Length: 315
Image 1 (tube, rainbow, N blue to C red):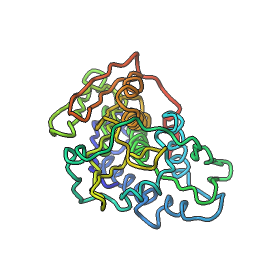
Image 2: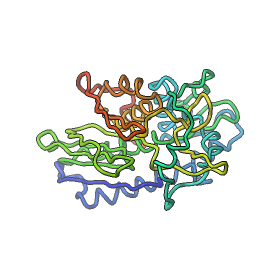
Image 3: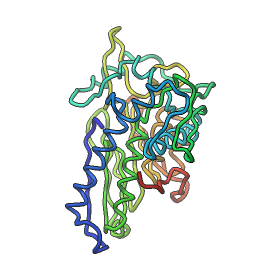
């Protein structure tokens, strides 16, 4: 997935379950398979084959259908800002190859040359609404040429699927490049502490204590590159322009019951700009970091709310 992945498995509560060491190995195999099937950087992945298929209706595995549902749900949840149809724009901006093993451009330098800040806006045509999942026949329908990108929602889906497999253990934590899902019985009395790194200083910006649920962080520093014209690009695209979004925020972290929702909310907040981010993050709590490096924590209005993105199927 082009990122560091960490999985921690506690003691098993069910004698029939795999040992924690074996469970971790099984999860590693699951995540390798997930990447093999859904990576846009693999020409033979299910995702790449879907995007290259000229048919309007294409047979699709349960995993690919789940990923597309999650992407469309994130678009609906974010009023179209977290748009899964921006693959062509993302590649045109300079993100056509994996960033694995590459160093990002300096964020402070990119901020100096960035265009005037403004919140992103959704595409009024909302092409993502044209996707249709046909579970009865195991297929996906979309207009010819409409591309799908799992993006960060794919990481959230993977983290939630792993969490589903670890219900027989006392505690667990799954970290997929900043999409963190924790659970089990023990965290209720001993919460997991999740640290958010400041994108400019590298120091701790916040520490969340989480009994169960997810925290996801979206920022400009992890995938940031120089473009031929001297400007900088990053992976968070403004759907209304097709260009990287410069909203006045460089990082947003969101809490939520699932990693899918946390990832969607973190991106929704960052793309919304400072004022919009407060409203987005207030549902479950989170934080934002402005261009000047200042950090603002946003308290949750109430408890965590379950949502339609909860994973209930095996892949």
